[in-house]
Image (cartoon, rainbow, N blue to C red; front, side, top):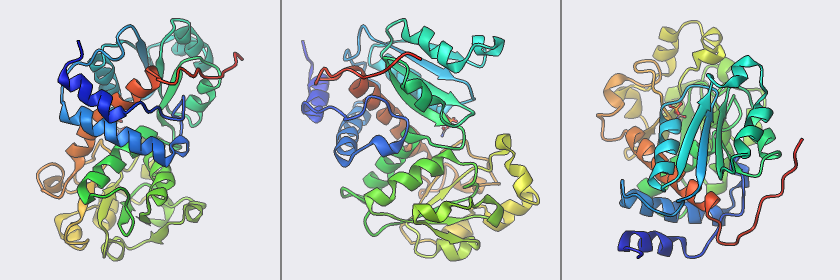
Amino acid sequence: MIVDVEADLIDARAGRDVGFFDLVSVDAVTPEDSELIFDVARKFRQHGAYKFPFNKGRMSVNAFFETSTRTMSSFDLSAKQLSMDTAAVGSNSSTSKGETYLDTAEVLDSYNISTLVVRSREAGVAEMLSRHVRCSVVNAGDGWHEHPTQALLDMLTMLDHFGGKDLTGKVVLIVGDIMHSRVFGSLARILPKLGAALRVAAPETFIPACVENFGVDVFFDVEKALSGADVVYALRVQEERGAAGFVPSLREYSKMFGISKKRLDMAHPKAILMHPGPVRRDIDVHSALVSVDERSHILRQVENGMAIRKTLLWLLSDRLDKRVKEFKRK
Ligand code: CP
């Protein structure tokens, strides 16, 4: 029997499928796809921890070769809330004995899994694997390149705050370690499609040479950049990628670019503060702003992460159009 909550989700989906089989870049997401994803994600969010039977009999594997709290736990819990069976492999897998990512993915694909969620230190791993396995591959962050599910949950957070179907007229300011940020890589690809104007503010050493290709306005003075910003999106200085070597010291970085209450007050009066996490308190963002200030949407982003990932696992594992992915073994 379909109970009301399940019928509510089925109604929100309205017989639609996403166009993509793998999500390795936000470039794969069309406006129709994002409308479907956000419609369904809002419903999943509304129904909280309800356990859905939609993906019963299907399996999902998290292959995280780099650390994670939010992305890994939300993909795992999302799969379980859709009644999927899950497994996790990572740095303790046989890759540490020299097995390649490709051989690892083929092993997992042989179990007839529906989805393989991949995080890697290196750029391009999810994309490479997606071409060689039957299951859907979701990029959970690849090196400095992209983090598409982060961008989708961020878009949902912004759209719900501002209302409306797009971000036309809104100014999004991204502050910090642009150079090493896969979150920036996905946001810079998706935000202009939704009509937002994009600014970045960072020390010159954190600005990649090709950044103007994304159509962003570059500021080296964060206080000038804050004027008129509707979203202040802070990034972490990514020490694990050598970022500390790009600034004189973290203390100095914080003094010049850290988001304090005084600085957030310089943005639009209704501006919101966002951060993908993990936050380096008092380096990227002043501690008093992280979860206490009402302008902070950081925990809302986390909540939306669960809804977006549940949506993707459902849509990718339970295609109504019954189309199957074209792939080739190596
Ligand atoms: N934002 C994000 O990807 O966080 P985790 O590294 O904790 O997954």
